Image 1 (cartoon, rainbow, N blue to C red):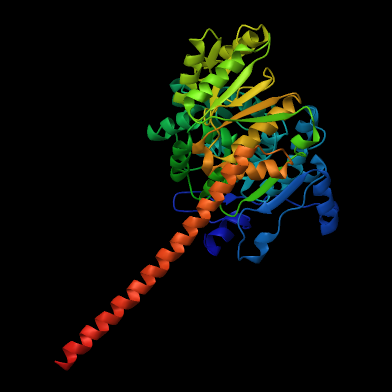
Image 2: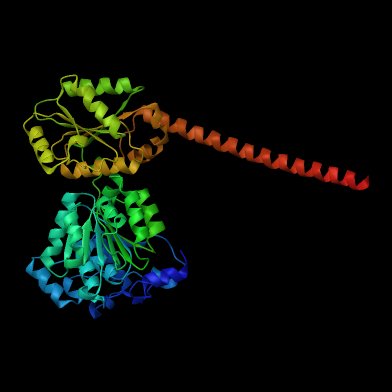
Length: 492
């Protein structure tokens, strides 16, 4: 990204308007004297105590882009009396860790990536930032045609919850889009300031041209990892390409896998990552946490071992089985059901009532096994289960680690069982490193696969070098022969 575009998007108090688009005031933050006087060492210590890290996603050549706003200690430091009254009235007395660092960055007009666990205050953080951004703009509701704030989230249930949070502040007129054409048809009368929707529903709104999108200046991607897991990436990319180029983007997520990092590098200008990561529970520190690995040469071996294990389950012992894809999860559930085991696939859970009734069935011992898959986006709660099976090893080791950490935060007596097959050789290095870093016992067959993979990579590297040298020598010989032929022709 060019220095000019970065400067335009980062520190200018008012970004220059594009043709047909209004000016957008981004930097609305005034650092109080108390925060301004903090020494770098004090700031670093404060961030460490609160388990916060803040850094640029990519290193820029522009010197002042390395500067990141200091964290706040209290809501008073955001300097907005009306917002303070609302926060105190609603019972929000002190900011959470993610809010302490992310809020001043948002109010400074920066693009933000917030990474923190569920219920850590991410929603309230971007609600405050977006409302203050909206209130600072010169253009008012009654003399414009379109809204300024856009919130995209993964599920309809989540959209309704976010809508309720905005309504509590009563500072901007908001409207949620969940496929209701009647609501969309009344936009010209209600003049919503904030649109909250799932990506597919808002995609339909843009395609049908039912709303003026030329005024959007603040874009929020809520639960980004869940949206990508649900397959909404294509909708999000289409929406961002249609929206005005002068905008501020806030991405909130529980995890930050490689595909989100790639997206941020391509579509967010010099974003700042704010991560509030509580101390990760190390499996080696708790003897009650157990990870078991079973070698299965074929799928038939996997089915047989899982079946034998399921038949030995005690009352009220439930199993969560992770598969590679949806077809696999349905197939495993169907196969176990034919063996008189009460099994269900998460693909059949659609409404909120389905989820609550399923949890009740597990508690009542009427359901033993739930099958899930890698990018289902369902995220069934771990608390009802005691066992987790990785029927297939995930394609990315970060997914495995995230599942283990999530499960351990719910209950310390969780037991993890993972099937390892010959086709897992491509991810075995990541698994080996994870087990080594956490000081876990590494089974012999994993160690053997790791060494074999390492040896194969070494041979491949040697062969590639030999091939490269051969091609280089061949080119030299060809060039020499061409020179000789040319010299002969010249003499003739």
